[in-house]
Image (spheres, rainbow, N blue to C red):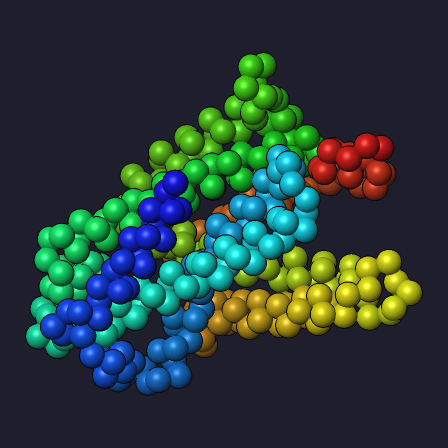
Length: 305
């Protein structure tokens, strides 16, 4: 329901923007930072693009509970990516072509909201706030479900503490994992906007690494040989392209000379997260190394041995 409301509101605002007094296609002309130049201005925005697409991975992370085929899940992922891209593009265009220089936006943190208020008044802001709330609700719901199921799967495999694999006696849900995730979510807003920006920047790096590993895994799985069990030349080529793009994102974020490189605080947060991951890895490494592939498939994917 929230997704439907979000889609309807965005579509209505996009259509209504054509009838505003300030509408003009000439307003969409990009405004670049004159000090940095065109290329560096684009790179700064491009580097955080992986973070904007966090959330679509909720679908495969919760696939174990789907009652339909994996082929339909794949179509659902592709559709969600296209729908998300269309939503981003629509709101960027609405903000761009109704914007006028006389709008006083100096120092405004939420440019889109300020532009909508100047163009549509308080009604427009209310409608926009409705769309934002729907986006937040769907995001919270999706992340809560997928992250708790991810912890459940990791707890079942022995990567994380076994407490996370326990299911509720009545609802059959990983309730301890859900409580843990909700606890973290309730703490994070108290860190403040500045600290959350550091975490967002750090998460862009984590997402890029996840995309890179996934693409490399897919590249290894699929084959160009016709007799191979997983003969899919298109998928293999797509995986290679995805791996190269992910690597470019990592270079933009981690290379010190890059205009989109992380801040010192984000590097510190990333380093702390890395140390935590290494500790968990070495604590569980000996046990995981001695497990057979069939046992891991059973514990992680819940497949029969």
